[in-house]
Length: 178
Image (cartoon, rainbow, N blue to C red; front, side, top):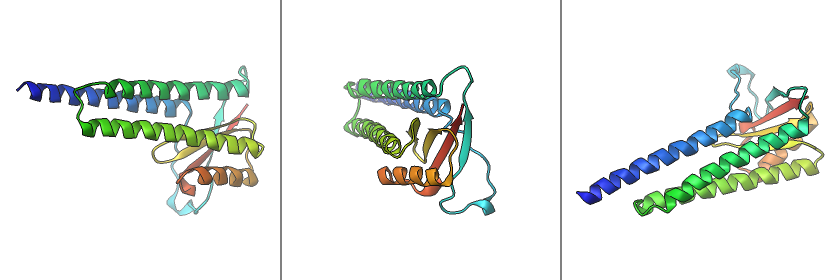
């Protein structure tokens, strides 16, 4: 009977931690305008068509400060999620299967962070001064400073495809105006 209670408590603790991780990811996506979606007419979709989304920044803050703040929020959300996972892994109450799932989650977070950094580095090398990449479960959002033309769109799509397994319809390009 004791072992059964421990298993139930472990499952409850795991569920709470996964919910906290999901909340941290949601907050990260919410603050980077990554969750903003527009309804589109199905007949107007074309393979490879870029979707532009404008995000405005208050005139009082500088654009570079805007990108710094986004990076800070993304980093804090990741660190919080990582610490929750690490605390969970220290628990003796978890089964090997639960520990394997948490380890896999940690690896996915690290992989996403590495890919985001690589995309940002490639885009800076291609001439974009301020850029932020946010990889989600189903899409990748790239926020760049200023207006975007079709040549810039191709550069962004190329960098994302080179670093990830996402298809063109899953790439969202967000132009941040001052």
